[in-house]
Image (tube, rainbow, N blue to C red; front, side, top):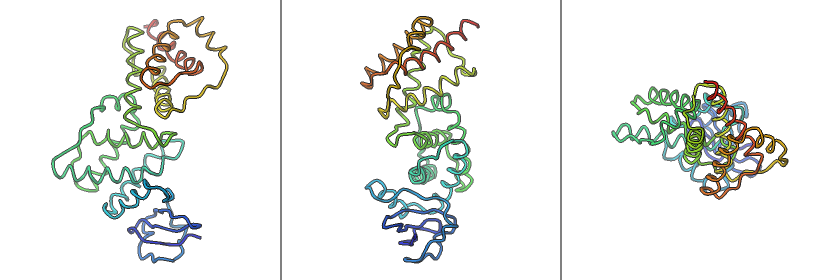
Length: 280
């Protein structure tokens, strides 16, 4: 059974479920909800993290300082964004994004917008998140009658990147910077610009995004076997040399040793980019 402990606002309840505190979201679910009452599960739209850590307690405290309208618009943004991801976005996004949007609106009203130095990188390497950020920015601007700066789309994109990461310890800023640095190494070693409109380039960047996430979260693991690695070393020595340059950078910067299967996948993508250049 799920019983009400406290109505946080018209859309949110603090509840007890099997002696564990949780936060539930549902439009109108908190209206006239009284402590001890049973919760109608038909009205639950989303269940959030059990409140067992200091971090989650901080998130709960946000419901006292942030108007409910910001949680409502955040829920709408997450619903919009989730349709573009194959796996659920982390529930912490509901709180971190609501907090960000509240202060973003306050800053805009006060004429003190927050800039982001990685706008170009987000637009180039994370176009899906940037476009979702643009839609979210427009939605918030309409809902609260404010003019939000363009960089707000980038800030929202960072929240989406973190929420879509496989690890809870992901750092979107580091991830974006690492993707950009690796792309720069490849451009330098191949001695030419890369065409961002090609399918091979887009697949390469997609691979880099997950690769960078594994590096940042220290979740690199070998799947074993090096037969394909030897084949690539034999037939695509240039691509493997570029992969080695990336390996050396990762080792120096992050103290992470890349196994041969990671180098193999990097080399496959790099060899396709190199062949595109030779065909041009």
